[in-house]
Image (cartoon, rainbow, N blue to C red):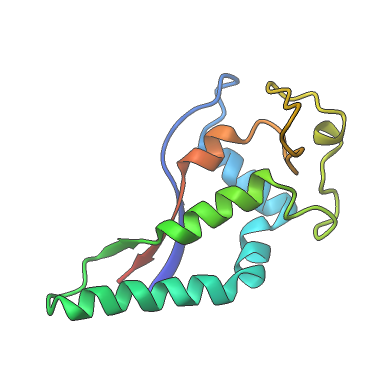
Length: 128
């Protein structure tokens, strides 16, 4: 079985696909690898829970099993400064100057700006 970070199809207004943005962010910052290292215990615990759930049902495992807690944890980490000062260049200059589309008065500044579609499109799954 393999844990996979998958992105649904979609496009930004500048005609860049969400998959392209995800690949660009990973190539430049390596956030998936860092996230995997930072939260390895939480991901492993959820994998155990999912496998136990399916084994208790005494049915074969499906080909794809979603890891909802890990997905939500990644989304939270992406928007709540969990990658700040752990990767060179993060927080980005644009996020420090708050030039994104959303001006948040009462919310923390995200590490990256304008990654909302990427954040919503990403899903962590366990593949057979």
